[in-house]
Image 1 (cartoon, each protein chain N blue to C red):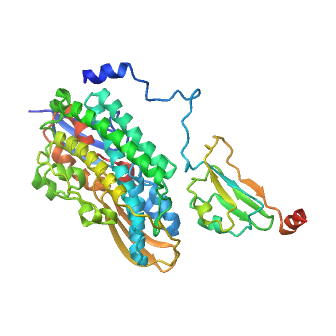
Image 2 (image 1 turned 90 degrees about the vertical axis):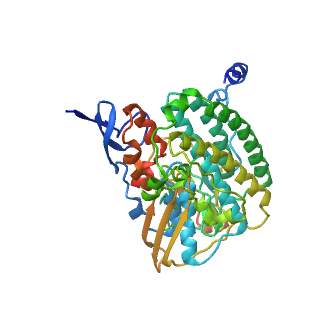
Length: 117
Length: 358
């Protein structure tokens, strides 16, 4: 016990001084979910799979409704997406108070084609 | 005539952050009668689990904060039994590694708490420092420190890449080094011995009669370990459950230290035996029929009963958690103790009330 105490005097602290120093996040860290609107086909797969009901597809207005406060970042929508439009990136999620639905507009097929031409 | 006083322990108590109300009747300082109340953290989880079985995986993960992965493993095992599929072999190994890492995490956390409860704060700091290594390992494997979202029907969702394998090995070596030092200082310590040896004795007959499970039963000499039923990858792994004879608080401390070393050994065996292969496949099917699954979480024995009605929505989920069984020993082990020994003795069964109340 005494040996451990003396050894510890010369050791670095095991904690990280947060604002000045940051831990590196692991490669598979589940942070934010990013949606690539150009690839999305509004197929409802993510909506059906979401355990927290954080995604809703609005086909009439061509939009994805996403509630960040509900999302548990399990990544099930990312696994399920057939067109790989959803991605999970290892940047930590920002804190916030906004509980409203975030509406992400998806361009219609004609618009996409026009852009390509 | 002796005057009895009633002293409550909880629902809020500095030693135990979770809500339980234990009423101790004292004659002078001696406990003569004990009754307890649970149910403060009831959330209606069993009813909420009557949903799409794929969504249920993530809900069952949130029943307990510490043993979250083993809850999903048991749930997934039961569903796999109903559907009639089996996970890939590599997935089984990964599930075993996760279960053992979780056992390490839970045991180190509990040992730290026990140190704090007997007034040995230095031990608390050292054990939680060692636990941080396990938490980092879990974060590197799954991408999250607490709720891992690893299991799915038919396997696991993330593979352990060679880079991760090497990292786990490094971390286990570092942890073992630290644990050997801690074990030496801990089990030769005068204070810890005086506070725990011979306190809260649970005899073997009582342990069998009251249906004690997990490390508490094994500390009383009952060789009861569900890992010996060889679920997941335990059938390929060479290990014997650790059984002690004492039955007092000290035995319950020692058994958790020894099981931590055993967990490190099992993780190494898994890493050596794993062969490359697929880890999961997408499986969609209606769930009809019923099944039971049992596993060994860090605290004892976990039981899931699941019934499906032919759609993808489950009809009934019944969960029995280890603390529910271990709580029944409280009146026996607390009887005749000094009141100062009550907190560490209640803590010694490693109670988890968010599991028990669900």
